[in-house]
Length: 294
Image 1 (cartoon, one colour):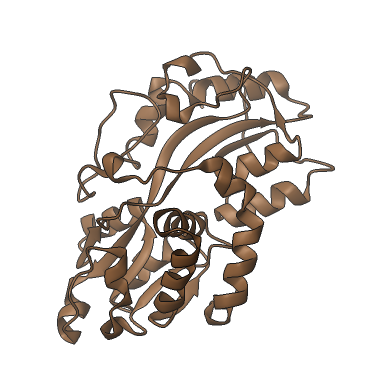
Image 2 (image 1 turned 135 degrees about the vertical axis):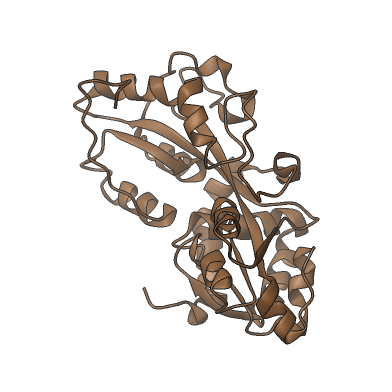
């Protein structure tokens, strides 16, 4: 606020899938001026409906190439990356003689039956990036076969990316597949968990920002988007996220897994956006009966 005098922000915050669905539902009469911190896969879906105002923020050329829209002018700019990790409760696992998983395939161990919790990808961005990563790592056929077997070990699918690590930290489940930063924070708070990046790599998405086409507050929106790409803004992102768009910032939060940026899988964001509906329909058909009530 100090850097943007005169701009008053009314926030709406929710899970990635919820915000993305609302944005598309309001496409004939958009209510937002700016989308700030939404998964880029959701922004790419919005772009298909021509919902983003083209604008290249001042200073955007300083960002890492992977965090910049390749078009000129840009329609979005990246902020930070969020990853899928395994939060492993050492106390609960020891009680039940469960070994720590260091591979995604380790999660198929029959001893884990009912002991794993993960996000529903239809409501959680962390859930979707996780499923999309498995399909990219293993391929479509083997990816769905992996999830079929994993489903046998899932206790429940939750509707946010943070909830699985919280449930694991509280001892309700031995392990949760969830949001990286929350896992590290829970360990910092003293919960008995280890935050594990599987050896095949971590699924990820990036939080990004964009101006909504048709905004009545274009000048203010441009000022705000200019600020979101500054080093100062990225330093704020870096207090929570280990991987940010601005180069040279490497504040790794306490208890965060080392070398996370190197462990991020090679992501095809265009594929993730294009196949979003198809993947969620198939996932829902196969597994939604075990989802928590909304």
